[in-house]
Figure 1 (tube, rainbow, N blue to C red):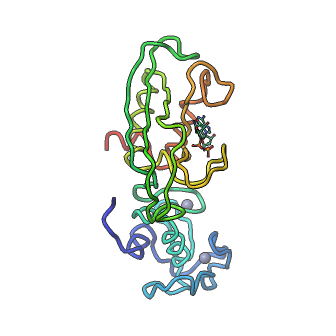
Figure 2: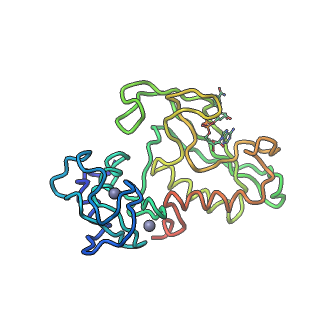
Figure 3: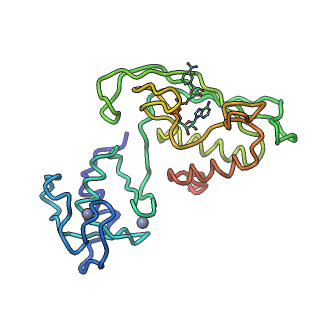
Length: 235
Ligand code: NAD
Ligand code: ZN
Ligand code: ZN
């Protein structure tokens, strides 16, 4: 886990104070930026007054610093920020995936739609445990249905690139999360996060199999929206 960083310092690392706020609404509290943050009182921050407006260093979007602080304090507090307007990630986003293991095998059998190469098989194993402070019900158990979960990638150039990025996503705890399964409705269980995996090899009736000509590009953009990009491979 990341070393403890003061939330105010994380905010100020990626946002600079704006002297004259633009005539816009804050996307978090919906108040005018020239008016104080609607989250005044929701935060006990002494360091940031409610009328201070900040601008993200890269994307340039403006919001109340106090609103961004409230949003940060509501999340995993991992030292990273995500612009609520355009989703640009500042720092390294991490998730809440519980402990487990990711194993990789290869098989010569080709996938439908990828006749010229073998298959990479990923096996995710996560045992049941107790929810931490980053989970919806800290101290309560979580269940793990359908593990080990097997996933498939074509063993070609693009498939191997996706695999390397999935390994990074795994170490950043982004592949699974603890929540309510939208398939079964079960709460407090380990579920897929925002990065789709192919769990079926020989048909795509479920939408979770092959052939699917767009899959590798789709998963690359899902990885990118979690901040996992090719730039992470050879920094
Ligand atoms: P979920 O149903 O909350 O869905 C989260 C995301 O995972 C969604 O984007 C969804 O499209 C995707 N997803 C759903 N089913 C998938 C599948 N079979 N393969 C790949 N992606 C899938 O997430 P969840 O509860 O983690 O996923 C449900 C899947 O988990 C089931 O289809 C099954 O594979 C497994 N499961 C198995 C058991 C069991 O007892 N064997 C029980 C519950 C879930
Ligand atoms: Zn605001
Ligand atoms: Zn932005």
